[in-house]
Length: 103
Image 1: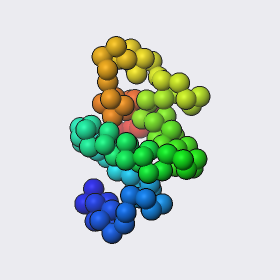
Image 2 (image 1 turned 180 degrees about the vertical axis):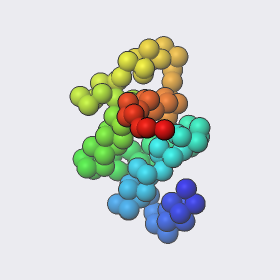
Image 3 (image 1 turned 90 degrees about the horizontal axis):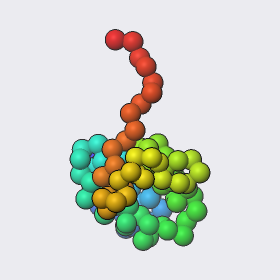
């Protein structure tokens, strides 16, 4: 996160490099339990790059990896169950990995 912050200090949010940095930072913030920071970053990304189809596709792909969206763009069962609780997207925990590795 330190290197991402240093790089972000060298650019403006409107620059394309910001989108790439933000897409790397969002899951790190979520893993650290910093849902508010992740949510603000998502909002800033959408605000400055919401018309960029590649960035929005990458953000959707990130949400699929994190178990927030299905590949078709619909909310996953976890998000659907929590909709009545007015949950931020950044509050949803990533889906457990189904990859098994030996001890």
